[in-house]
Length: 620
Picture 1: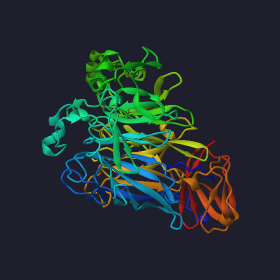
Picture 2: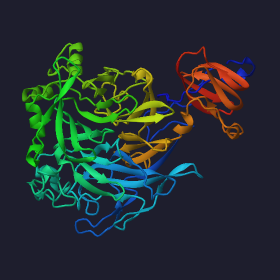
Picture 3: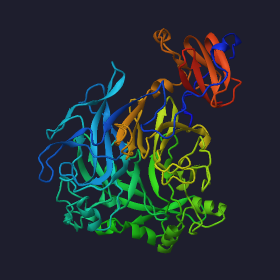
Picture 4: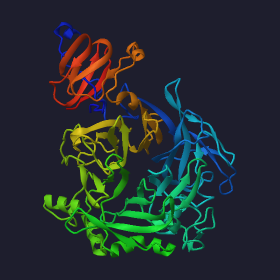
């Protein structure tokens, strides 16, 4: 059992006269079972909705292979989520266009073999106070709520569509084909993967390729493992970014200058690259220079070594070029995200159980190891290429473009040795961080970090649990980056990864995916799905008193937010404040203010006389 610790900075004075209506101790009402068969999100005042369900919702399709245009059930394994700005021609209540990746690789005569992607327009219904999916008609005549992105007829088949990019300059979208393949046999997958293994000629589909690439013939498997730009408004792929190199990319960041792109690769331990592409002309990524990151020996700072991407053949050899130039190899980089508040890029490094032998192999190829890894190995009394070196939990790294430094921002864990013996599961435990993004509300910045557990041992799941769920946390970037300061935002059902979290442009919500859950979970949570948690605009709204109309509202409103001295209410109430372990510390009767200036920072519960409970986090 784990209590919710949500970033809602509220406030709460003991009045003995009414203490009897509130028990001296409670079982925290917001405690939830860790093992669930559905997605669990915070209680009121936040709300949640399911928006899009794999294998359930229909997507519109183009004429693909020998199948005519029509509809098909959406693919599964939702991963990346991108949001592009609404257009001038969209209705006033439109929030933006959402793109959802499908990581599952399968044959599909209507959607296309390999992975996939779905787009839809998100709208806000002011009357009902919830989100809706708009019915849209595309230029090719397709009409419906959900549209399959056409890769087959534009850029050839697509691979395992995992992470991606939302441009910080203009909202352009790229999907990452992370499924690294090295043979046609591998992509064919006994007829269950990509069945067309004929050679591919770059530039024969629209639009054309790049200077130095047009007309070049490559193997079918060589046409995978790129960042692929898509048009979310017309549900079509635009181009594969061959000049960014053939890599197992997970995610990337297009900087506000619309020229610089940072790319993170989820590859082998000791060979996962951080790359940089600098376009010749802002906004035009068909021409530019590709680099790999190389950390200076014994330092957190580093330099960028140039890779030759002048032709398709050169781009295909980007990895071996990087090794020859002693580029730094990380332990499975996942999602990078730009924090617009400090200008730094934060990157999840998910870790792997025992990377020593793989590190040793890649060091022999020329890769160098990052300082945070060698320092960590030294602290464990070993070396990064030793069989004794472990990295069960991973971490969040921070890259500073000002000095090209990379170091640990938040170490996941804590370490738990549960081999052969029961160990209580800790309240705060972050394992194998994967998805990463930022939420900006009321001049506050929050990191959203999501798990994709690599295993269930060493405390990555409660003792004895193998069919593990995952969690999403928020971190207020104004406090210390520690496990204690993480605030739980969601738990997936058994077997599911949580990923893709992204803030909605209207400031109300956060979209996220529950990916590849176990089939025995209750419907629709037995399918991959896309959800939204919303109400952040009301919860984290800064120091703002309610309007006169809100004061008359029967619904309880609490302000200011954030605060560290007192809680105010929009009308007089009876209420009690409890610590995170259920001990009563304050009671008020018929009051509009609760003084909390003497209480320690931490997580609390506020209970009203009618038994309703809200989460409270006091910060000083």
